Image (cartoon, rainbow over the protein chains, first blue to last red):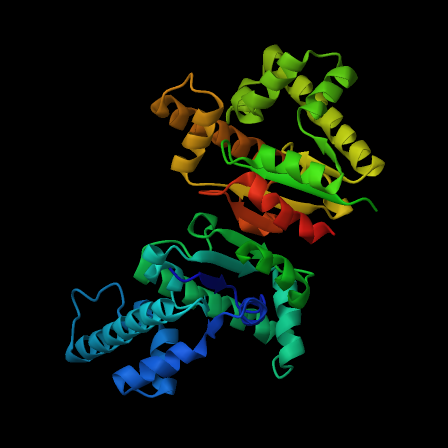
Length: 197
Length: 197
């Protein structure tokens, strides 16, 4: 069985960078936005539209009253989201079958549970996340960034809970939870990579 | 400043073994029950009695109605618990001043926050914790062990919350959270120790 590392991460925690560097260090494949591209090929939906569907989260598409207010619009949206998730599930399993890999986000820890992936969760204190985001792109103010970080993570959490029934970021769903506050990602990657040698 | 590693751990997760081995590997001092012995010296209370006070947790000594039912007994118990905690705080700070060390439990992560310790939390799935406890001592049945594990952790959680105001085991209070399910402690220690080299 291939070695699979899945990474859940708070926005701004450096989880994506950690995943990319870890894959490089270990010589594993790395999948992040590549999954969106693949879903696009499988569903004939644009990448932009898939991102929108994923970021919307099912809760926003289906409010709690869904049972009472099911309309043609909801029905269509439901099938769309379901087909995107189904495509994602298939693609992620195919990738896991192909070779050792690092997969960021997309409920991969849950989708691949039968493959016994090593499940990482990366997080940090708000100050650290804001600083990391600012270093990458200074077009937003600190206040705007805090709001964005909270909003993105709220969506990730809802998305994860909706599809897995588990709590996003709860330690019991992961093998290792790493706090990247005051940490240079490139410095910790060589240490983390030792786990897989 | 000395290098300080604090370890919070679920009962049966192997956190104590991890701490001991990590201290050995790094050549750091290791403190666990040694702290109880020191408290005993400072307070003239027996180690047994201190353990009892600590295991009781303040909530059990001071029920929620404490404001209404303060009695001589409660007053005495209050001073006892406070003096044990104060002694513990002093001892832990003294140890941190002395040399690099690993300290297990005792809210050391909180007490030493100004020393910027590396805060580990060790946890595992219930099945794994039961198996680990059984391998160490087979005098309890599986059912009894599950009950004991839940009870000990409930006390640790209450104790930690009472003195720190934080949630025991919540990832944000730690730098690294390690799931030891299906893991040999002695195999992961050399990897973890790399963080401190």
